[in-house]
Each structure stands twice: as C-alpha cells, then as structure tokens.
Image (cartoon, rainbow, N blue to C red):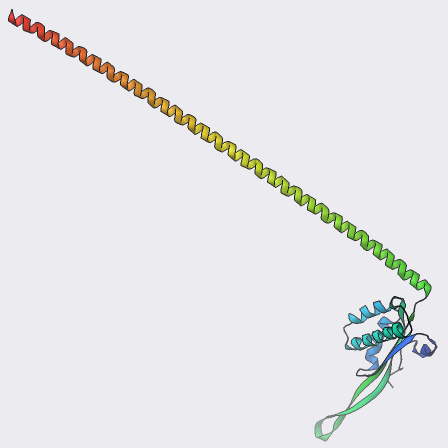
Length: 241
C-alpha cells in the first residue's frame, strides 16, 4: 500500500456543492500531484492559477488545465462569475498502473510500474463575507495603486520641471557667455584701433620732425654756401687790389 488515495478532506467531497472537472489517466503518480494540489486548495481561482503557473513541477501544467476546465464549466454551465469562484476541493486518485520490465543480468528482469492518477478539481462560489473582504482588499489595493501612480506622476513632473529649469539656466549662462565674449572682442577691436591710430600719429609726428630737420639742414647748408661765396668774393677783390 502506498497510503491513502486522496488528500485530506477528500472523503467529504460527496457532500460539497460546486462544479468539478476531472482528468483521468494522467501520466504521473498521485504522490507527485498531491503536494501541488495542497498549494491551491481554498484559494480563489485567479490566485490558484497564478500559483500553478509559477510552480516548477511538471504535474502543475496538468492541474492548471483541470482548474481552467472546472472554471469554464462553472461559468458556461452554471452561470457563475469567475471572480466569485474558489477551489473548494481538489484531490488525486490513483489510476491504473502500466507494468513494464527492464532486462537485468543472467536473464532476469525487473518490474517497472508506470503509475497514473485521476485529478479532480471542484470550484464553488465564495461566501458573501469572503467576497466583501476580497472586494475591500481590492478597493484598498486600487486606492493604493492610484495614490502610488499619482505620486509617480507628480515626481516625474517635478523632475521634468527641474530638468527644464536647468536647461533654461544653461541657455542663459551660454547667452551671457556669448555676450561677454562679444564685449571682449569689441573691446579688443577698439583697443587695436586706438593703438593703430596712436602708431599712425606717432609716425606722422616723426615724419614732420624729420622734414623739419631736413629743412633746417638745407637752410644751414645754404647759409654756409653763401658765407663761402662771400669770402671767395672778398678774396678775389683783395687779390685784384
């Protein structure tokens, strides 16, 4: 014997009301399926589907298919709302066992048991008290999500305004820098023009001074030449006398 066929609480399944789905001859043992079924028992169907989707066991895929089949039966056949359903019961029964043999030494053989199981999932509508609790939690979560979203939007807006202010300040600084550079260039040009004018004026003064010097030298030379001529005339007169 390998223990009880069903999980805890499965003996009272006949007394439970709800919509069920059964998958028979699943190629896995009931021993492997029961720990996964324990994870979803009592959960609402959406939460149970999330748990099965994230469970790293091969049997979880088959159990998820059975759960979705039970939900579809409840919605289509019984007119239930999917948001009001939960897993009221789930269990795995042992199915038929396929017997195979593996060759061993000296002509012997070892038996291989390929076990199967039958998986049953029953869903039902939650009580009004539980629905109220879930709705209150959903509303609180929605309000919290809305508040968090508003906070994120406000923070994003503030960051955008700060970035825009920084860009405007950088543009103003750049404009001021360009203006300062233009002022410096203009000042340099004015200084260069003044220096060039001063140099031109100095050259003109030097040229005038040089001309005055040349004129004075010419006058002195003419005076010397006149004196020399006068002396020569006097000398000639003296010789003639």
